[in-house]
Image 1 (spheres, helix red, strand yellow):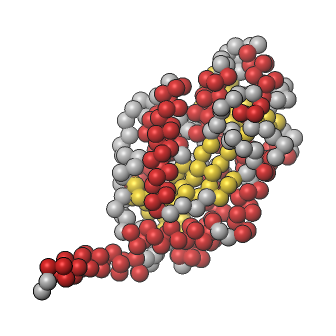
Image 2 (image 1 turned 90 degrees about the vertical axis):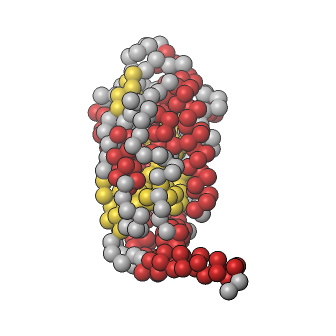
Image 3 (image 1 turned 180 degrees about the vertical axis):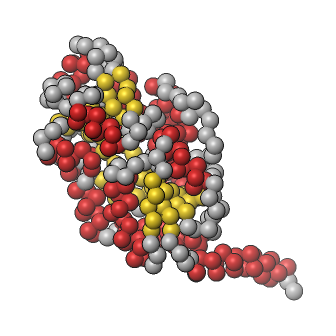
Length: 323
C-alpha cells in the first residue's frame, strides 16, 4: 500500500471518533457557566440567546452562576472540566483579557486551557452617577467637582479587576482624579450602592444602566467607546466629552475546555451564529446598548490574544494587581 494512502487511512482512523462524537452531540443538557451573578449584563445576554441555542442544538442549556474572584471561579471550573461538549463558559474581556495581567497567579492559562468558540457582542460602559451625591451634568462638570474635593468621592465596581474597575481606574488615571474604589460582589450590588448613595458613581454596562436612567434615578454622562451608542445617542463619548483618547469596552464570548473536538466546537459556533443573526435578537441587543458580534473559531482566538496584550498595558499603566 502506498505510503500516502496509509497515512491518509491512519488520519481518518484518528478523526472518526471525534466525528462520530459530534454527530451524536449533544445527547443531554449542556451546562453554561458564568462568573457573574444572576441579573448581571452577562446573564441578560445569556438568557436572550438561550431559546435560539436550545432550538439549534436540540437540548436544554442550563445556565449556572459561579461568581467570585473577578470571574476566575467559573473559569477554573470550566478549565478543569472534561472536553466532552457539555461544559461551556460565558466569559468576558475581563475574564479572558484583564485577569491574565491583573492576577499575579492564576490556576489556569487564559489562552491554552480553553477552546474559544465565538464572541457574542461588544458592550459599552457608561458613566452613571447619583445626582444626589454628585450633582454633575457633564463629564467636565464631574471632573471639576471631583478635583475640588480630593478623596471625597467613592466609585463602585463589580469587583476587583473586573472591566468596570479597570475602566474607571483608567478614567481616574487619565483625568488625574483622586477617588476611592469600592468593589462589590457583582453588578446588582454595585448598582444598588449607587442608587442608595453609598457611592457616587460607576462605569456601568449600558444595558443595565438604561432602566434606572429612564426611571430618573441616575444621570448618564458619557460612554466609554469611541463612538456613541445608538440606544442612548444623546450621551457623548468620554473621549469627546473631555478626556481625549479614552476608550474602554468589553465583550462577551463562549469558551469550552481545551481539547474540545473540532466538530463539536464548529457545531456550537454555528448555533451561536444562528442566534446572533436572528433579527429579533439583534434588535433586542442593540436596544440594550450592545453591538452583536459573531466570530469564527480562529477570529475569536485572535480576539482573545489581542485583548490579553491590550489589557496588560492598561493594568501596567494604572498599577493594578491582585495577589
